[in-house]
Image (cartoon, rainbow, N blue to C red):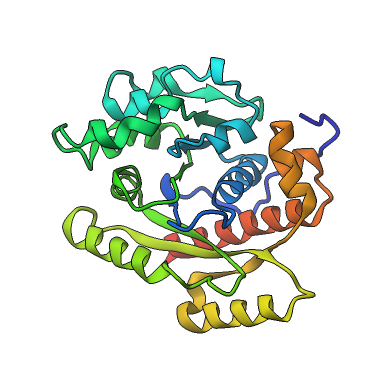
Length: 276
């Protein structure tokens, strides 16, 4: 970690809110899902929130991006899902104050097949994460780029879904499928599930198409779309290879500043939601 990176003081406006489990999901890959989960979680931890990331993607990018060697990951989210270890057994510290992770391991790649024969296979993560509400302010579940059993487990465990959406031509392609899945799960398994928000990622202000896509998404989804947009930024892309979030790798870059702004916007919305 870069010890010279400043950690902002906790703003007085960010009052305590009830613990919240948020699934970060999009079945389309390469949209900035893991980058958003890691950097938003880091931003929240920097203002005094206790945050847990659950790496539910077999690729394990969130775990790698937080500098966790594979040899140090233990049973991880695979053991948590299969029930061989409890939450306390699989949580790892990241070296960032107030930010912990349940890492992904290579075994997770076969979890969907193993889950098929288990009882209540879609609700195992919800049960396993129940103790997290007593410990953490926010739990972010980094989902794989699919709508299989792992993602379904995450959506049933979650209070809400955050959807990173790339500012590209096919941005809305597949979003209706995800929203349809969320609606079905709301009706059958998790009636409280809601859209936390849509995060527009990889925005390029020099590209007219980015502006058109952003306007189109806002036209379809209104205030579900965060005002903060995450720009394309080389420093954000470089950070995972150094095993550190962008705001510790380069806290002055445009991407880091955007994620801190997003954390603030999210907290203000949360406070408004609770007050309402």
